[in-house]
Each structure stands twice: as C-alpha cells, then as structure tokens.
Length: 318
Image 1 (cartoon, rainbow, N blue to C red):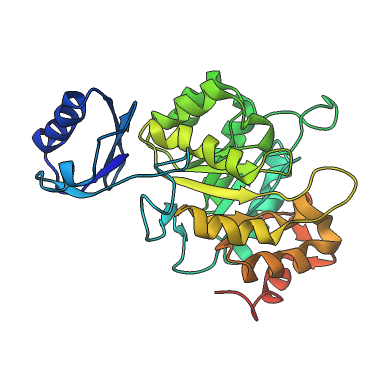
Image 2 (cartoon, helix red, strand yellow):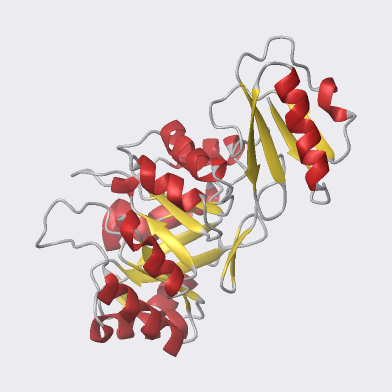
C-alpha cells in the first residue's frame, strides 16, 4: 500500500502516517519528491485498509498497488508527470526533444552538434549515451574532460545539457558542473548502486532502455530511483539491440497506461538514420511525448539538417 501526501502536508502529518503504519506491524518507506511525498507500507499488508489513512491530515489518497513498481505507477498518480530540463518540458503538454551525438567528445566535435541543435530551435543537448560500451575503441564512457567540454559548449550556445553517467564516482562532477540532467544508458539499468545514488539527488534523469530489458524491468529501475526521493524521471526507448532494427511501439502505448512518467523515443538508436523518421512518427502516434535525436558529428540527420528533419514530423508533432 502507498499513501500519497498532499503538497501542503507538514512533517508532523508525515510522521503520523508513519506511526500508524508502524502500529500495524509494518515499516514505512518515505520517498520525498519535489511536489509530493509518497509513503510505502512495507510488509504483510493483510488487514491494512486505505480507510485507515484517509482521515489523517495531509493525506491526499491511500491505495493498494499490485505491481512491484509503486511510486512510478499510474495507480499512484493518475495524471501524467511533467519533467522540466532547462527550457524543455517532457510530458503530456506537448512535444519536446533533445539532440546530440554519442560519439562526439571534445570541444571541436561537440561544437557543430550544439550549433545544429540551437539553429533547429532546440534547448537541450546530450553527450554520451552510446547503447553499448563493449568495444573500447568504438565507444568510451564520458569522463571528466568530456563533461567539462559538454558544459562549456552547451553554455556557449545557450543550451541545457544532459550528460551520460555510468560511473557513480563521477556523480559529484556532474553536480559540480551543474549539468542539467543525467543520461543513463541501457547498459547501466542493472547498476543498482548507481540507481540508488541517483535517487538521492535532485536532478532530472533520462533513463534509456533497449529490448535487453523488459518494460516491467525498466519501470523497476525507475522505481529504484524514485524510492530514493528523485521523481524527475524521463523514460527513453532506444528500440531493438542487434542486427534487426526496430521499435515496439505497442510497448510505448502500454507504458503510457502503466506509468505517469513521460516516455520519449530514440529513433536513430532503434533504426539508424534511414529509418529514424518513420520510427519517430510511429512512436509519437503511440503516445511518446518527445524524441532523443542522435545526429552525426556535423549535427546532421540523414541527408539534411536537423531543422529540416524535424519539419517532416509536423503532421504528427504535438
């Protein structure tokens, strides 16, 4: 069972709920987000009813949640969440996007990408986020030098920045450089310690996933972050890993029913430049609220510029 506290709930109200849970022989797990606090009753819930909490001050609602992912479920929060990163808002209100190049590293490589994002009217760029880091010559994770370059370039073009984090030891550097969001690549979804640490900070997270992780497993990874108190999570579907490109847009539609978190898609990761626009249209039609667009090192998409590529989405853009 979870008890959702109102935004105006006082600390004494939260403590009263925790004490009532303890009196029933269960443990209270308190998750403090920016807008609301969610309290989970951990243990055998037999005999525990929502009515036991609904009369307490500060309680917005109490409910049983059958799924293992409780805080991020649509049951816990029927209305969709809106997550703001810089000037971009991901959620039901409209279409939002971020652009970048996973292989771009230094100032000289990042600058053309940032210029392209800015000229296309974007407000947010990303760095890193390659889906696999198995080959040390093709993909390298972002380190201190790359993070500093991304911060410098994004600031010079007036862009917010989301940077890949795969090593928990670099979390302090992300915070020191005041990067606007964390980008968690699919390889890191099972890094429990990393997810827990991200849950303890107040920083938006773009949580990427490919088909090696089930949609339910993806939501459990998001739940680990939310359980720490960080509810600013955007889910990003990177499609299918392997020789056969594609994206299961049915899973996006299912996620829109299952979670209140915003869901966006990474069509280039799913199908390459050639199929990206087709997959982007399908993802948006299935309920995705935005896109992560990976350009080449010149900041281009397929045969044209980023702005021209985006203009082709207007019939289904929201």
